[in-house]
Length: 106
Image 1 (cartoon, rainbow, N blue to C red):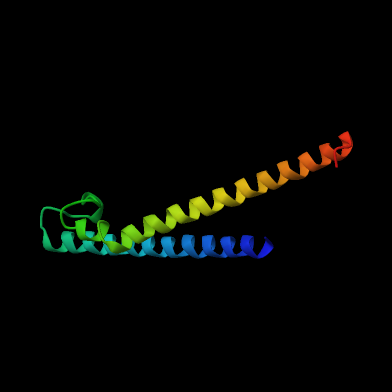
Image 2 (cartoon, rainbow, N blue to C red):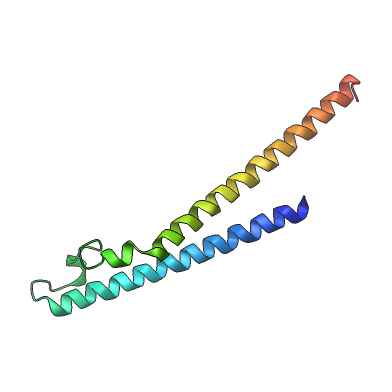
């Protein structure tokens, strides 16, 4: 059981680090795209005037890497939830054994 918990923790850590890397790289690419739009289009004077989600950045938001990042984020959340649930169930099991000893059932 200890090895399983360590493996889950390691996988959760790798999932959140990879998802963070994916999302940060997407945000950097979006900023580059916004700067490029300002440079090309004369109606904008600053990158803050260009919204992050527009027709030019759809390919940055909706791609395989974004999907992978969302899946990894869901995996991280479910791993942490599973660890907390497992810990709570172990505490309940230990508590039930202690009560059974007190009652003379074991």
